Image (tube, rainbow, N blue to C red; front, side, top):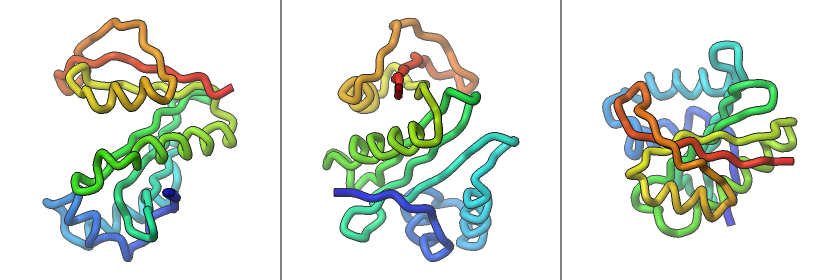
Length: 148
């Protein structure tokens, strides 16, 4: 069983070890402060720590695209992968998004990311199969899920 909670500065070392190797603790603390503003570019944004038995096993974000569309970005730290944490975190994040009034989750997934495609398919996301090259030069497809 996992829970989600907002980050506080005490998590900076864990984030440095698992996700932000090139940033100083102070830079990560500043990043956490930015996350806790719950807004980026005048749009809703929220970052959560994914906790299992009180231990941070990853992180997950919600980012508003429009009044009804949101994306969810899960990252489970490498040593904790393939234990079902991403699926549980995505389910909780979808519930939070629905409670906030969002109706659609839209995900951009690299076509070579087999694990993410399997995760999203298991959660009922659908795609039309069309792919395109995103701004980072990756082949991606859009996966959608209705929250209503």
